[in-house]
Amino acid sequence: MTNDAKTLKFAFVCFGKAGSDASYGPSCAAKAVKEMHGKQFGDATLYVKPALSKSEREAEKIKEMIRYKNSKKRCNLYVKNFPNTTTSEELKTFFSKFGTIESIRLFPKEGDAVYAFVCFKSPEEASRAKNECHQQNFNGKMLYINHYEIKEVRKVQIEEMRDKADFQTHKKATANVSELMSRPEIYAILNQLIALIQPRLNKPYNNNRGGPRQGGYNQSGYQNRGPQGIQGPPGNAPGQQLPKVLGMPGQIPP
Image (cartoon, rainbow, N blue to C red; front, side):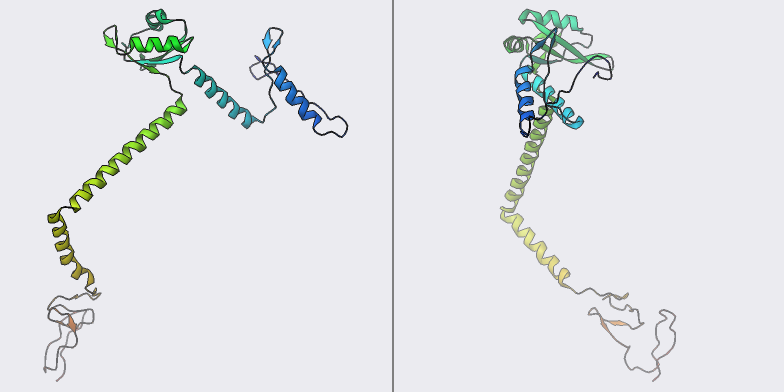
């Protein structure tokens, strides 16, 4: 078979059974993978692996990519803080004195280069370049150089740093509260506030419109007597006028 781009040929080889022995085919396939993977076949190097579904192949590609990047991370340097007009040839000339450079990749932003990856052939060459060139002058600017970290690993490290910073902030805030509560004057003020608020919290809620205010009228038209909010008809005084509340004018008969 050939891939969609017509650039790669591949095949599926399936081993069959030997009579009633169900393990024969799988054992032959495992032996073929072990002995033929990486072998030369004409001008090509064979890639021999168990057949996978599409989702399994995608996961395997990601694993292979991470494995490769991890193997090269000690050879790969992250370089920034150089002039925006810097070219890959200028970086190659500057770093080639430390060893063989396999690749240089510039990453621009709005047309200007802001950082680069410089990959050496060996980890020793990369380490020597990092140690001697970090914070050194390059065309008027001081270089920042560090070893490359895999994107997935870098995300985990950033999350760990954020969690640590949040924990330190929480710890500091808790310590400040504990310190305040340990001061006698603050403790006394809090106790006084609680003593003032507690009676209001324990006081029953009056749902009538007049509330407990003196001289108010509740929903039934009766006057509240005094601040205690005692409700009832306005006594037995003859001829006492009823208030005009909720459309209820008139007099109480003697």
